[in-house]
Image (cartoon, rainbow, N blue to C red; front, side, top):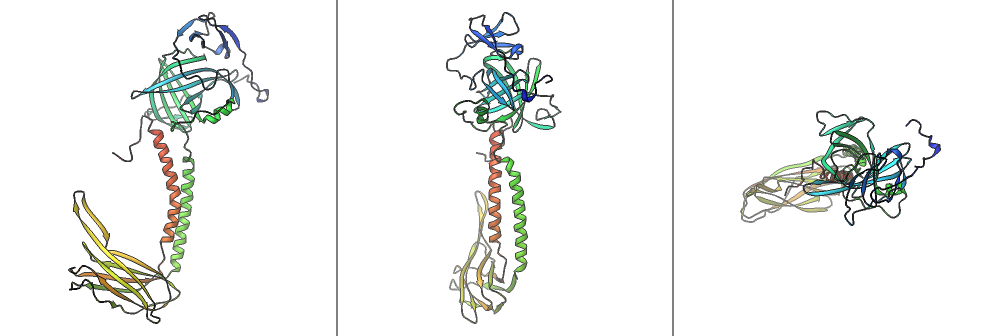
Length: 439
């Protein structure tokens, strides 16, 4: 404001004007000078017209025993955004949603040069509120969003607010029982509020504060009440990090992919044997073992992959493999089952198993090799066709898969936490999210 002192001049001290309540004679202290429109007597709870020389009584209300007092006492001074303000008024307001009443508190703050600003508190969540500098821009979809100074705010809730308790001084005519239609739009950590009472519309903008920040600003003793749940404009503790974590995940995933293709290029990935076989029905459930033709494993020691595919339907085949070095007689034994079952039940089609199987033998030295194969199945099985493919020096996917999973888990975990936080926020709005799991 023009005429405001330079910052070096310090915060001005409010002058206190002493008056007496015309109803009970109690002393009144007016802290906000001629800007006060109504004053509430703390002794008899009379609401007085501060503009009337005789302090005309506008209303008297009863106080229910045990009603919650202000958390910040009237007359307390504190700094908000570098400016010293004094708490001059307090009111409790409420809305009723689906038969449940929700109360919150509003504090009137005054500075002789900066004027008024407000603090609101609900369930341990605080907001620093000031009147909007310009009227927000509303369009055809104003119910869903509003533009204020280039920022889009999403509609959160509309309800009728009722004033149930007042104390101190107010720059407007306040009454217990006052009703106003309040619409909140949010863009965390800010909230934009539209209040309509009679023919008057007021817009205000607020920014979320923690209880510790408020306690520090007003140098209050003890600890602030713990915040309960997620408030409409409470900033998410993780959402700001989601984008950076996603970018890091993408960067490392690309690097991991490039590394995989480089390493895959260094592997031979050679097919050294492909054979088709048939296991026909016979008196015994197994067939005497047989051996394949010889094949060479060249170069350095590497893994050997044995791929099996079988034409099984509602049946199984078990293959006893032995990879044998012809020169040394050293053998690597392994058994593999290929089975596939399917059918229909009350839930529809079902299936289990697979017609394909992959087994890997690690670190096999170079040399001349052959496979010994011994198939088994039910004694009355139909003919089963199966094929065996042997490859050497196959690039392994497990290491890279585990690496990708290690990168993915933190990103997914943080994304889930951010989504859960937002779902809890919007569950209290007029636009609750659809349940993830329907009962």
